[in-house]
Length: 331
View 1 (tube, one colour):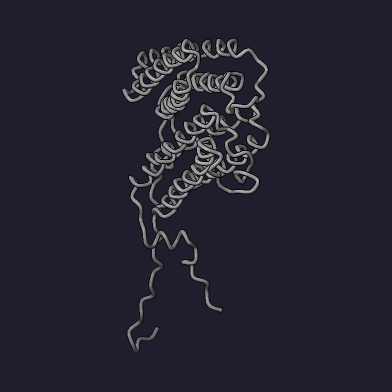
View 2 (cartoon, rainbow, N blue to C red):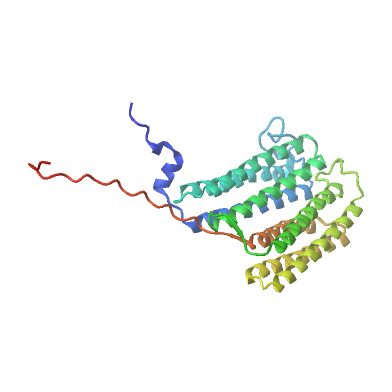
């Protein structure tokens, strides 16, 4: 039997016909970050327009229709549109995986992280279906948002890796500074987690009908949320002074200043939504702001280490060719 050609591998076929540039891979990675934020914002729009049960079952929209019907109105269209964005996000992640796999040399670290994004999307789609089937259970809704945060985290990691090498990470700051940064990341994650509890206990249930809420006083949880805002702000200011004291590179200090600006803006939006009794538009902007806060924190984290390019593989020397003896020679 003849040898099966390696070109049957679809990635090899693509690589032979298309060599994406490093810039293209970087932009594809950035597009997944943007789409991860879009999914969060549109998911918030579903809740804030009371469209959470616009499609009353899953995976179909109704028991007899895959898509919303005319009598379902705006709520069905909004809920179904958010479901369809999942497929759009999959397209962007698929493009990233193909581009990273087709590029020479192959960026296997990017393809692995791309597949992590894909399975996070699939898992979140299933959780979204469970939310509908359980009538907008607030605990599952909270997990839905947290899984979206995990997706955004991986997307940011892919974008960062697309702009650096595949060598081992090397810290650019001293260990105490790195530990302070880890504390900042942890406090910000706790801030986001408490924010999901506020949402689960607050007045925006996601549907006009009576929906089960987390049995907590949402105003008290909001106060705890505000307390963590001050903790994160304090850690951010302390980190900036620390980096300045050790004469850290300007890029690291600038990332902290960017985080501080986003935190102050997000805090102002939070106070506006509280004193105006949680209008839907302002709450939606606050959800968008939470994504920006997390992105800014991750940028601070990534700015403190680097990965060098791996050395290019050295080709093996060609085997020595035997020298032909002259005709008629004898030993």
